[in-house]
Image (cartoon, rainbow, N blue to C red; front, side, top):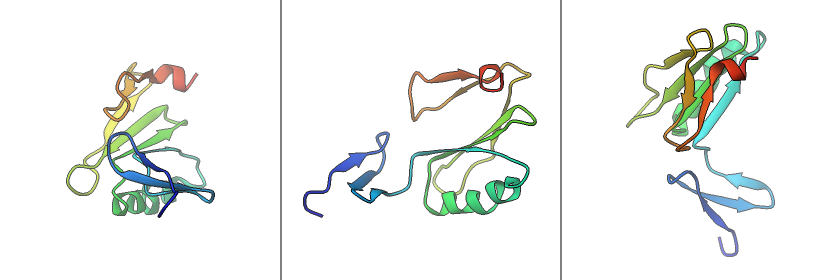
Length: 108
């Protein structure tokens, strides 16, 4: 498309930007669970993000004060890494070098 800016998302896939928004899957999705959406977020949305090759999906659970980090390899998401505020874990991603978020600060 002529005149449409193309962005490179976190060093991965190009994105088309128009007045209607950004076309293409994000490199990182962050989901905050709620009791009413838990099943959809952990099931249907996960499959949707896998199908569209989203490289990384974080699922924050405020009730348990945990974060599940799912990363795509050459296919579907790998076994999730389970991080918790109680353990003092720090959330980081290779998609955003230098970003380090202590989980206790997220769930204060």
